[in-house]
Image (cartoon, rainbow, N blue to C red; front, side, top):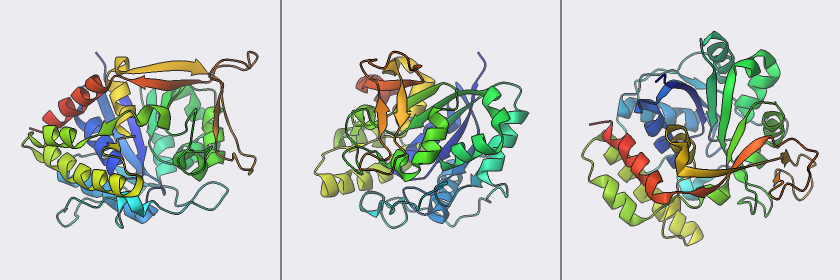
Length: 312
């Protein structure tokens, strides 16, 4: 069976780092490259974090630095409460030697998608600035995008405002471009990702894998779970971004519901909300997204461990 070609667009971030680990080695996926964006931390820090993860795990793919701000509005403050000053506190990485690819992330996405002999799936796990800008700069890529499987949004409650989730509100205009581009969108919103709680028992389970990926996961999640408990009072931190990669590896681990999703870009109190027509009340609107609603938690953690074991 042919591997599914993907580009991972991210803002590492502890959960992004686990998504990189999962995407890089699984035999069902071909990771064409990693692009970085301002989000959990500044662009400089998210890019350095992506390079560190790749070097530590021996992942040999291009890493390209992208947008350092949203397409239209100022960026939101970074999330140091959860991810720390570096954006990836916890692990200790050796001196960085892996080189950054000189191409801008937007140009890398365009060039790579157009040059591919088969369609490419885009997997954004941070704000959608790079993806929105690539679509606007070269609309021809749309013909060769298989799916856009993204982490962001919520059909219920946000985490920055009552209405909006971070990745979407940070660049709502870019999200608007993505959800109106005409290509299939799969949305891993907070309603789904908050089911992927990394409890201490999960960290203990993964720590028994005596390889670089097992150690990295453990070091990441010990810090992540500690800050989630300190900030929100949760015993387990939600592992948001890896749900995208798990879905690509085995879609049966996640239940989806097709619905029309509209991005609020009005600038009002609901700015950045993903207005998902859950009950299909707006019957004249095309169902432009698969919104993920239920996670098979056991299957999800089995997939994560399967990916960790690939680094033996």
